[in-house]
Image (cartoon, rainbow, N blue to C red; front, side):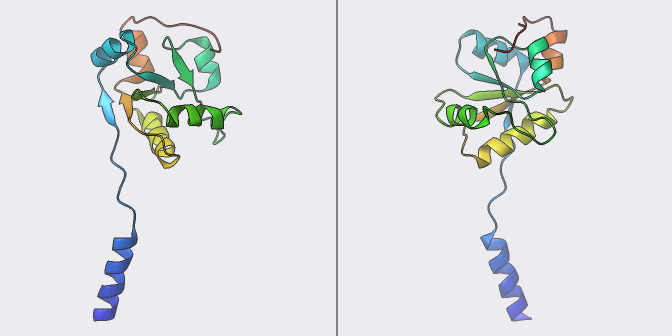
Length: 135
């Protein structure tokens, strides 16, 4: 019995600590930070959605059908060296995709990520400015 308990304790101790959920940023704070250009903005919606409209100065890093776009490595390298906090947004009602992307990027070494509460849909519904195009 002691051997089983000891093995279980070793197994638990060897597990990496759980990743903390990213901080959620309110739309109000996001607008203030974005206006002051104190953050990087990351749009993780599909590339077609990004082209149809996105938050000004957003960087597109879509996660479509389990694939990363061709520029994935360059974008992640840019994010890894960012000196500003990164705010991620998607169109999910519970910021699900944004949180998943924060976890994936964290595994790649990206730091200081936050999630926009309400994401794209709230941004648009509140009448905030959007831009169209691939960049």
